[in-house]
Length: 226
Figure (cartoon, rainbow, N blue to C red):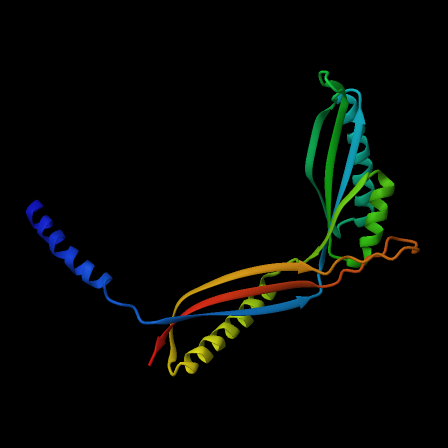
């Protein structure tokens, strides 16, 4: 059995080499783009609470008290219509660095980041104001997005693929040939959001959600046939 196996391997090698040396047909590469813009249906606001004290225990305790007040106010405002979660926490020492001297410990800073997700975009301004009044020291970010981006993404990909195929057909026709089988297909997707616009002078912080823009780029490699 060992001898037969060795013979089988020795005969397969030339065949594999002959197959790999077969020239492939010429091909073209075409790129298509598709862009879809829709209104967002989800807002995410990140609140930060930063406290500083001479000891780590005091900084942490002060931070906990402020965050507890922040969470209570947000939960009272949103009820079951929003989602609140902690997404970051840190407690670190602070040092002073005198010229030519050793670092001097000056205290500690505690930082807690709370993220609020809300599907009622009309409440975003009120949520921001409530958070700041309840003890948030920073509003780290405000982002408008989609709860389920897949349908929009698929639409953008379909548009991009259709355009890439049309480009391939046009280029093949231009050289007197036809586009054949697809060798490979690659995708690249990017998402951008229209900047938030705030207008001063209102009773609550005004925001404009804008649009969520999803752009897909598809690259096709297509065989050329006569």
